[in-house]
Image (cartoon, rainbow, N blue to C red; front, side):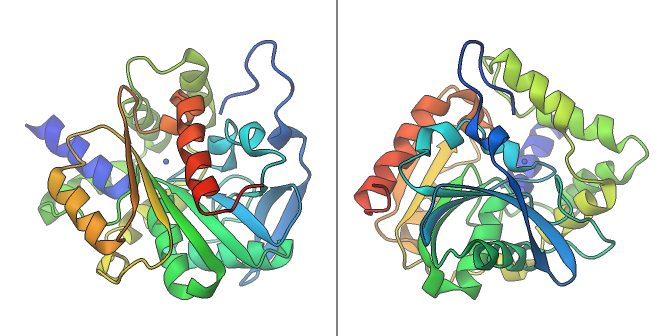
Length: 294
């Protein structure tokens, strides 16, 4: 029972890459130059592929960085401009001692768009990245032409406060890195490619403890789970799980009428890394339908 509750809390709160596969060309994300936007005195690291004032913007999850999306970079190269962001406190971005709220992250995303000269965006958020892009849409609806929730929640998961507190507190202990490593490994499917496991084990966490704990607590803020409607084209790409109930689907379809609700079977939380071809095909179809890609 305790294990089941822990897994439910994990999906609720996180609703976080390997190098080029053998024989394949170098990944364009690796070759792209680093850029830095500035938000509230903090450097926000990002990379840009392609040109144009409309972009597909990839927002990673909890304790991750932009390399979570490395299997998407070559798939969409030449089809649409792409922006990859290290959220504040993650990857190569600054990590000052502040509260890492979804609003802080969303405002940093806007700083990146401004620095990159992007006026319109489809924002894809994985895990914690989903409430980040949701908050961005609240702040700047005029700049958003689409939202994609990648195994991340659009509705608060109602769990006992004690269970949430117990789950969150484990990351505030002395074995932070080991705890995160075990947690991430447990969110992969049994068939996850070994190179994905290896990368996640070597690269996570991509945020220091003070950032990770702050962000985890911030995901419990009721203000980010409001029922205000989503009025732009939206897509969910989820890993099949008991967390995604028929009631959740009904809620999401009411929240975002016409949403493209997709579920992938046989994958874990890092579905865009475990089976990138299938994932990329779903995302590409959404972008084509909404006339974002060339």
